[in-house]
Amino acid sequence: RRDLPMALSWLDKVPPQSKAAPRAALLRIQLLGEAGKEQEALTAARQSQKQVEDAPQFWELEIRLLARQQQMPQALEAARQAAKKWPDNADMAFLLGSLLDEAGDKKEAFKVMEHILTLHPENYQALNYVGYTLAEENRDLEKALSLLVKADELSPNQSYIVDSLAWVLYKLGRNEEALKEIRRAVKLDEHVDASIW
Image (cartoon, rainbow, N blue to C red; front, side, top):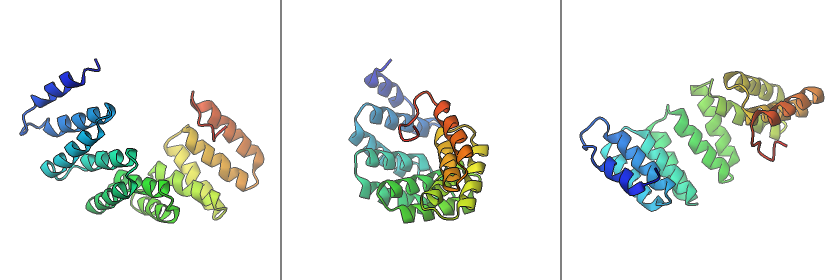
């Protein structure tokens, strides 16, 4: 009912030793963040990291909160630490790669995304990133096409993946197919990103 104090008071009733305590802590952090109490959420995320050491979700929340507050160096440092702590966690690696991309370090972001694919070859987000980047750089276009076709098969009808697929087809000079795919992309979501149009 959008009553944050009441919601938090109920979360306070969850005993710290309960199996539900980590989930309650995650919910507390999310509610605080959504309510604009980002510093409180950040403090709670860091406290929870110490209490539940093997829970990457608390690290992910800290990283996202830092990025939302435009504290990119701190967000990147936390993301690097988390990726090192959980080297097989594709979500954590993808978050690091996305932040690197956002910070303008596209070369390092590309390396991270390629590394994800060595560990998780069916990670459709990394497939899309690598395929789109290759298309943007106009290199290895056949490889880019195969990655993007695979991403579309694994996660069908995602407008951003279909957009990438259209782009690589265009770069390959397959204009009719590119036009067909980009028309498909704009029909997939009610609110399509303007860049796709």
